[in-house]
Image (tube, rainbow, N blue to C red):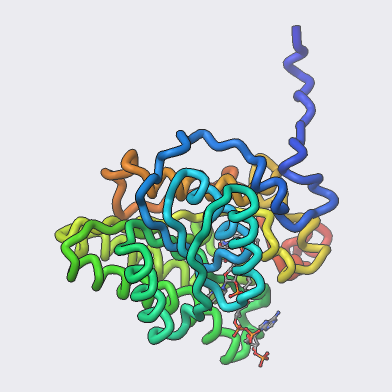
Length: 306
Ligand SMILES: CCCCCCC/C=C/C(=O)SCCNC(=O)CCNC(=O)[C@H](O)C(C)(C)COP(=O)(O)OP(=O)(O)OC[C@H]1O[C@@H](n2cnc3c(N)ncnc32)[C@H](O)[C@@H]1OP(=O)(O)O
Ligand SMILES: NC(=O)C1=CN([C@@H]2O[C@H](COP(=O)(O)OP(=O)(O)OC[C@H]3O[C@@H](n4cnc5c(N)ncnc54)[C@H](OP(=O)(O)O)[C@@H]3O)[C@@H](O)[C@H]2O)C=CC1
């Protein structure tokens, strides 16, 4: 019998990382050996395009989609990173994928990318807008260039991808599916106000398009990750990384596979009636926890509180 006055010890699973010693995401061996809940032909014959798939969640999603039988196309700005994903999938699954160097901030490059995917695979079933990012800083200190870079990447870049994909779906009379990776913005994002503004834009853009584009059988949904340990953590100081697991009541960091499996679900027939939604994967961060990715101001420290 357990003593109800004594709380059970918190058990940190190895894949969650030691909260006091942050890692930098799942390595390739972890991705290759991660089990999936899905049947192996779930996405057979479907074409999935994933932006920002040279690292982190995009890389894990590309691997899972290929594992589940999809034709996979990936893009990002850095060819070496894209090559690493191509090689991982070739090595782990014996499959070839399409990789196209693209800056999503360029509408012309995005138009070429969508055309290339259609030429190569004969169409597109699911677009995953995962590319994005930001830097941590107090909003009052944002440079104009920094603000514009984050808005251009996360809001405009995502929009160019959505619009180009939808133009094709409408022209071809084929159904479409969009999954936008945003963030958990429920209580705002101190020291990430630029990305919070951009992601809020994407969420409400998506809700609007879910209605406008339903007439062409195009669904649009968002996923809002909480703290997911990836290579993207390089943007944050060590002091902040040590606190990231305290951003949610479960006191853990998620991993890229947590998000990849939700994307696979949304790309599958099981999600045919999900439209205009925002699915949060954050261990409860929307309810409790703080991040302060650039360092907590004294005002919020107990010692500094007035
Ligand atoms: C979300 C924060 C709270 C939660 C944290 C925990 C959850 C983690 C969430 C994640 O999203 S992790 C994954 C994130 N991955 C990335 O962020 C990687 C990608 N990020 C980027 O590539 C950049 O941040 C970018 C700004 C979005 C890309 O723009 P660009 O390629 O144009 O960048 P730069 O040329 O490097 O910079 C342009 C401009 O931006 C300002 N700036 C950039 N970095 C900083 C910085 N560290 N601090 C202050 N300002 C910065 C600066 O004005 C740059 O211009 P220059 O001064 O260099 O001329
Ligand atoms: N990790 C986390 O805790 C959270 C992450 N997110 C968001 O989830 C998404 C994936 O993040 P994560 O995997 O952690 O981070 P990563 O930094 O590992 O992945 C982001 C990818 O986006 C690509 N990218 C960035 N800018 C552009 C661009 N202009 N054009 C094309 N590709 C671009 C990057 O490649 P390259 O630089 O080579 O182009 C990179 O591979 C991002 O949008 C991120 O902001 C949201 C909430 C929490």
